Image (cartoon, rainbow, N blue to C red; front, side, top):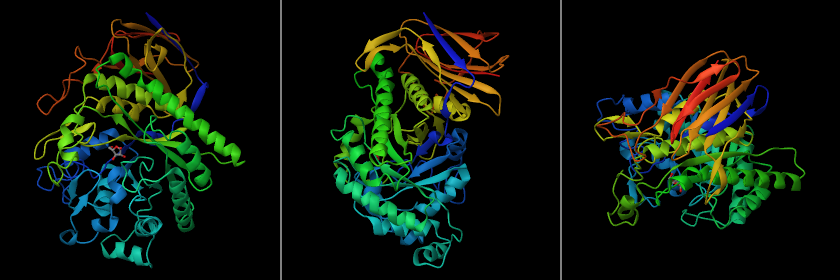
Length: 502
Ligand code: AHR
């Protein structure tokens, strides 16, 4: 079977905002403690941060890391994480039923961000707290000095402000599980007033208001409409979250979930347009998809801790999904969707970064390794920067619960004008047959295939572990051919591809 795809130079969707390759790190399980921070680890630096983990994070080249939550933030006191470490209080984390030692706070996180070469995106607690604490925190982080909170930061050892631009106005405030959950009107008003206060401090901040936690929320998409009616003039982005699951082990349905993702994004883009028109506004709001990933493998094993049957453990293993080869294909399709919707999705964050539903895993005291899903993210982050191409595709498809005639080959293309490269990311979702990719690359002047990487395994269940860290990994492929403007490549059944031409 054949997938005919045409890319024309100049026929672009949008410039991809590189911030679509961001990540998320929460005080949850072993993400921070035993993940990025482990003072006794042989690779730890003077701040107690693991060098082996930092190295892998650098490889992913994430432009920002969202912190400190997640559900955690909605009962978090940021002041508990500053000052001398031996005076910081331990707190009960109500979101994950654990104990938070507060040995890592904003100072330690900021220093780690410098080490790994990324920016901070900070989330504010609009659950148990509100405007007052939010504005104090922003002053602490961003004001040079001469005020109560900025001078306290200086006293705590940091003279320069961090000048953080990206601020989340709460987390998943539509969710009844959220500490301090609110109705859309209650939250919309609080977010509006908080945004106004923060803008009075610094109009150049980029503020992100909470959209829906997922597309099946009963309040979706009215939540977005109501919240934006309150906040449209004072925020920049609306956040969306979505997690991908396959507990029924139905590969066809699972790998078509990005149809649902695409519709979700499209609906919210429509709601943004609706509110914009209603307000007769010239301003555009864009989407910050600040939590996305596969999350279901660990659900069962987490139940005991989350139900409180283990008391209040400190940094226990939680949400430690071990990703398989099938998840590589899923993550590839998700990232392709973000590239194709780069006109409206300007920021996104893989949730999360280390140990907790993450591309990087560690053993406490032991090694760190790349999960299977590390690789499609690595390729997209590395080569998916430039202009997203509007591809014309003609490809047979299959019917499933998420739609009919879902194309077997999911493909996205990116033109890096400065580098002179065109990169295609393709996932063959056909479970029984190889697909012949017949790609017309028109007007780019491409003369050669620079690289063709494939990720494939005979078993969809194959995983990487500390003992077998390379079980699922990219391999070089020969055989693709570029003849004039026609590129042909064989895509074996159930395989991921990254093909670059120059
Ligand atoms: O990423 C795990 C959790 O998923 C986050 O804390 C929350 O925002 C979402 O429900």
